[in-house]
Length: 358
Image (cartoon, rainbow, N blue to C red; front, side):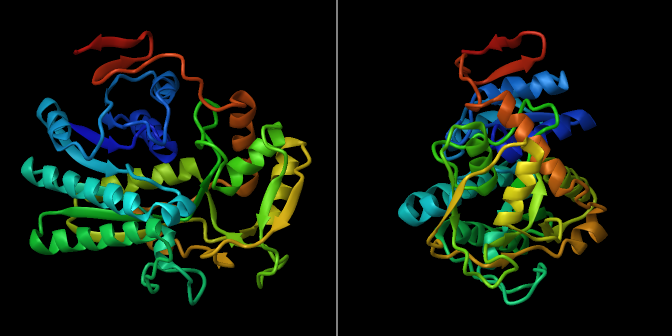
């Protein structure tokens, strides 16, 4: 039986695919490449040497999604697929609501139809909005401040209602804090479209010379140096959190929410300093106006995940920066797109494209 990974070619999805394959899981990957590149699929198999099946489908296409379930014995789903940029969501709210929520409804309807009731959902710490206390625990008030965060919160509520209607569901909701870093091989990492929205890829692209300087959004916050403080977690630690949640779903039912973070906060200026140390490069920056909706401080209380899942983030900020710099230096312009990938096909390490079904 296989684990279906929606959005499996994305930044977090690809690292989770690697960890699943290295652990011995059979996976089926679905992605439409809106926020990812076809090259990722080949690199996953280069890293792991494993064979897996991939579908270039949009999750909104219910007929195509059913094809995946008809052709594979799916046991559980890890759901990453969705639009993900906070700023873009403010400009394109209807697109975010339609895509993120409708695609999840299509997925859940299909899961019901094929009696697959184990689901790990990729949520976000943005659901907490402006936190009242720190560290942020899972029972903190929920009040997302932007359309992206609201889609995550709405989906969480949908999943809660789904379990109320059918107690056979086993659902883990994972609220991410700030994923950074890359796989230790430097083969896969974060490759945003256009100018990065997140701090780490922006810093890395300045260090490599792709961007001129970093914009620091605000230095008047009530923090140690005036810049925003966030909980940064290595993407491999985050990926391993999905494995622990998946394991728990195999023997328990219900809906559980878990923070995935380190429980430590670092300011923007501290991140710049750590990356300069890791890369040996000076990071020029300028302070600009703070962004609407940005909070001063945000870091997790991860104790529930440690207690229930046996998971804890192990990689520190230095390793996060070293791995991010390795990825950036090996891939200064991100993934090279040099081969069209058709759908669906089987992929394995020695020759990548084994059989094209259409």
